[in-house]
Length: 116
Image 1 (cartoon, rainbow, N blue to C red):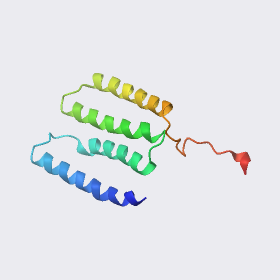
Image 2 (cartoon, rainbow, N blue to C red):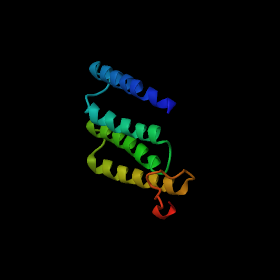
Image 3 (cartoon, rainbow, N blue to C red):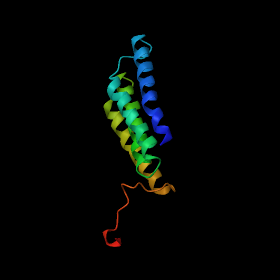
Image 4 (cartoon, rainbow, N blue to C red):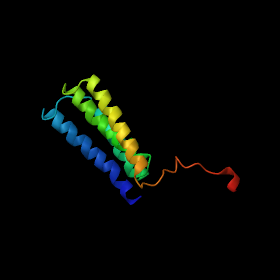
């Protein structure tokens, strides 16, 4: 986990830049904790959990959710458009997980109790 030591400083930098751009009115006022939080958890899911059949669905879905939340908060997207986008994205990510040769997550692999 050599990459893990870079996660916290990178998140602090992103938070600082986002805050600065919001203060300078370059970025519109949004609920940044929610929006950046969703994206951060999505990125961390893939960074810490590595790419597998679970993280390839959860990580990108949270990132897409963050983007949709930002667009909705800036009145560029309505909730009745956002929800079908999210459902479609989820289905596409699930399909990628099924058809790709990505390894299974340890969380999805059942342990055989009789093998002891």
